[in-house]
Length: 333
Image 1 (cartoon, rainbow, N blue to C red):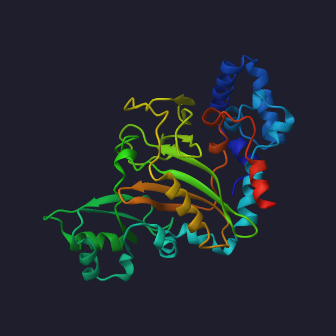
Image 2 (cartoon, helix red, strand yellow; image 1 turned 120 degrees about the horizontal axis):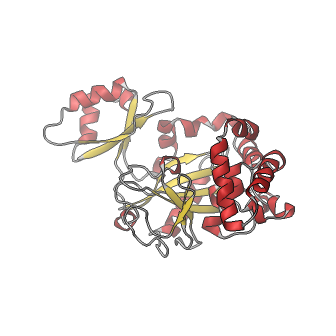
């Protein structure tokens, strides 16, 4: 795991300057002085130049800067709350599915332990399914829907899946309301939970992630946009793009008005995550990716190292303080 210093050394100075100019535009402060303060924050607060912009550090006092979850504190949460011997549960997607099968809302099949007859039975009545590698090593880069019709060669597909060490899942059919956000991607809700010392699950924050253009995924790293959701599951602040360093109140591709959108079944999604969080108590800090399907909320996957920047982004929260006090409140409860 790289340190904040490694990230700084490898970072693009050009992108750093771009962020400094963005800060200058809304703050009016001298760009050179902003760059100097950025470097000081990297060294003293372990906050990168992008986070400096996202957290509005240019306008923050030293005391307020200390309220933000930074790289070190994020690593502290990960290492102290999540036992090392159980982390592979989240890296091995097939094992994850087995443990959390009651929360997936879909069938899955381990091809390497299944006969061709088992595979044919799985495919019966389906016009598509999703395949992915069981872990990060096998089947690298293969995540896709496979479509079936009367001409499909099931034996050829079965052999392909086995050769690439893939397992298969029933495809998620997205709720019609969620499709309005972006019809080509599953637009997931990221819900992060934390177990306190009594193993009571707390929802720390919820984010809405949205794909753009013809993206099949909603990942921010692939160009997707995101925002923090209100307590009742509404989009009340603009969405942010890391790629363009810009906010959007309307979808950049479809023009849909985003402010006011309400995630269907949001309360049920939060309860789903809280229940799932209690399944494996050796992992107390988890970011859940939730899809709102035509049958209700379902877990797509879990991440034992949730990002710390998105839920503290001033542009999508309008908050003047960070989340560290909220985490400490739960942990000291």
